[in-house]
Image 1 (tube, helix red, strand yellow):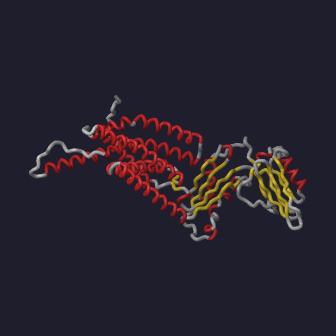
Image 2 (cartoon, rainbow, N blue to C red; image 1 turned 60 degrees about the vertical axis):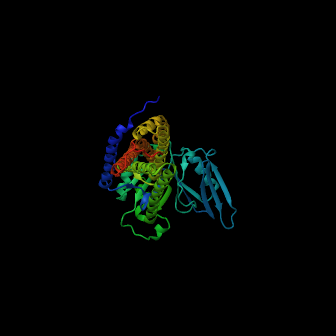
Image 3 (tube, rainbow, N blue to C red; image 1 turned 180 degrees about the horizontal axis):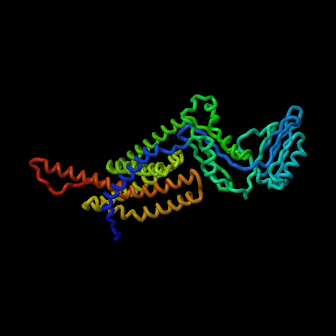
Length: 427
């Protein structure tokens, strides 16, 4: 016979602990000025950059036009123009193994192409890279081509953060991407409160000049900043996203309430919604206290946690309903202890196996994905705790109140004789 663990003994201490955690989260929220909002929820600029040295630059003063294209195998230059036959010249890295060989080959085959080399002549040509932004057309303005040396010294994220904060003067978030030797960063800068609204540049999705991330980095690392991606979020989009999040969470609570009411009873439904709210507040309090950036990734983590917790709660509810049918004369608190004890193995195995996958994400990733995994781990622990002690404690309280009400009705009914104990409703 399976041993029944008296979980009910911890209902009151768990309620006190939850009250302390929630109170601490609320106090921290106001004391720390609310969430550490990401650029998703406020006007600002986000750029993905790599800080790598320039290998060479190209200029063009020949006849017609010349444009440059890149891929992992080499560089291709397309020469075209009025009265000229269009030519596509490919320079494969396997054929020209060094930067010196590559540049001499390009200059010899294209009259009017000039170069200035900055990297050592023997630099491996396969290290060359180019940002996603910029004009592929060659002209009088030097077109820079960078390279990433796998053995190059790392640039600490703290150094990039200090440079950005010194240059921008307001909210900056810097995240490291990839391996440290990649010198790859995601930089988010909040727009100043006094930024003009209705700027035509902002309407077209361009970042205001006040948020010149590239210029700030170039001042510290001239000619070494490669822009991989650049986005601007205006205040109207941020406000719209916030409204959508509120609607999404409200819809989640409503649907869970409806589902649990139909499948079980209102008592179960209210308990499930209470558990969802409890888990949400605990995770949000953790995000506030640790100053984790609150962005769309954080919202995804919270919604994932709510779904995970709801699944665990429904499993326990189903066992409670079954045990009430099998043991109709047993006190409800014993039914709760029996049901939690019988589902304990399933809860532990499911949580541990899921936690292993989430821990792998936390250990082997960085940036937003690592924050996502950390929030999931906290939420999974909170979800098990909520189902075991908070939701079931609420159901026990509900059942006790219902029994007391039934007793009062029997005592207060004149001329009626009690025929025994009040019969509790069965799920």
